[in-house]
Length: 199
Image (cartoon, rainbow, N blue to C red; front, side, top):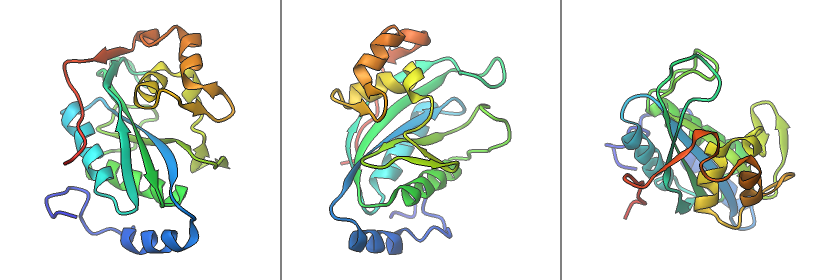
């Protein structure tokens, strides 16, 4: 990992060792879906930085990145800036809790502060689904709760993975249609900006 990577600072999260361990305990890689969101600072640069950091993670390969979608904040304090949202589809040998720790480390590297519930944030990294896994662990609920009710999650997910299904709820496309379609809940696709996969 390059020393210019803001997620490369020393951490108790020993990624290399855990990937080696995961490779010996998992048979092949599994599909995971991650939602990214930002409504503070340079939102596009932050989302791109998160994509780059995920792509630079051992034991993880990004398969698709959605378009960027803009939406008003849902819940939390009033008068927050609008969010940029995107979804990343990946294959990984990292177990779910290790993937969560990597996501939290990326959030921290981009200045995420957890003081107000649903408050504004520089970066949100959420695991929406992890192939074959359901969890009621309060630290890692899978599939992610309320994702079937949120167009800002479903629209980019459908864009990145048109055949996607949300475990326990059905096809993502049908769920989005039930909410009113791709522009439901004030969600707006931003075709003037985009995220890219690292070379």
